[in-house]
Image (tube, rainbow, N blue to C red; front, side, top):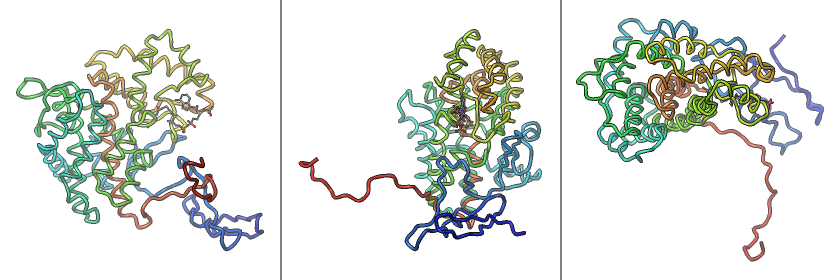
Length: 427
Ligand code: ACO
């Protein structure tokens, strides 16, 4: 029997056979369902895209019920244990793990692009002394579109590859300089002898020493966090990246927009919100009272819940292990006990259990970042660095997809019917 959905329209008595492919019907197939010649045709109403697939993608697979996350088929747990961020970025972008020589040349290419034009430095110096680093970062990424005018040629594959390398290499430099700016310290130039995360730590924390030596434990912890955050299929910021990219804007403009979406507290800003929440709770004895207030609807338990995961976020589990390794070097965060107690109570409480609310990736990442010496305002910036690889992979995939056009949702108009203009003296 053909894979179809039979729809009978009770308004007209007509029956339609709608093909079902990959567990979905094409929304455009509903357009033929009309009550008359001047009817526009049936639409679907799906605010926040809770049940609409906007693309076909080969990059990331999530099974939210089982807590599975795969990049190009590889389980996140294996990548976190055995891969590096640079290798994972290659995998996400190009579909396969690199050979030894491919990895060497990819690493070299990224390393060669870590410098920023001095005009970009001047641009960053112009920000207010207390500017939020996420605002600095996303504006500076947007500014790069004025430096690399060639990026507009998005139809040329080689050109897209060049911009991808530039962005993956330069976003950490921008992020580190945004941090240095916010604490009033001179910007540190990249050290290309170091690893991707080792160099990032150098640009963040180098003082007067001639050569910065990153802690291997912290560099590896950051690498793991970057692997975990590299992509997460069609989330809010990725949809923005694809949405802006669909108008054929250059990738710097699209990525600045995606970073703007990531900045919100319900998305990449959540780890910042978690830390603020833990500080506000302040003491383990106040946890039960806080949970009571959350259940009464007075705020949310930040770092809990996810649109897709309805079980333990697999990334949260890996981060919890990484946190223990980091705390051995940095000392334990005084907020860890509050976080553990929140998790313990929430995982037993009927309110959270019945709503399938579990810790997400951001519940513990903030504690690690804080232990490493980052202020909370830097947390979303730290998220944006690895997600740059995911955004670019999704952007590139979208541009190659012949099904895609400029993104343009429909609406159901609920405003006033046509009415004549009223002059101001008659209102
Ligand atoms: N604390 C308390 N209650 C919650 C929470 C929470 N963190 N999250 C959801 N709920 C409740 C809602 O109040 C709602 O209850 P109701 O059915 O009684 O009205 C129910 O659970 C469903 O919540 P929705 O908001 O409909 O779920 P949605 O899928 O739209 O939201 C989101 C997902 C935004 C992540 C939400 O869980 C949330 O706000 N979490 C806190 C913020 C956070 O940690 N964000 C990071 C997400 S991960 C990332 O972006 C990397």
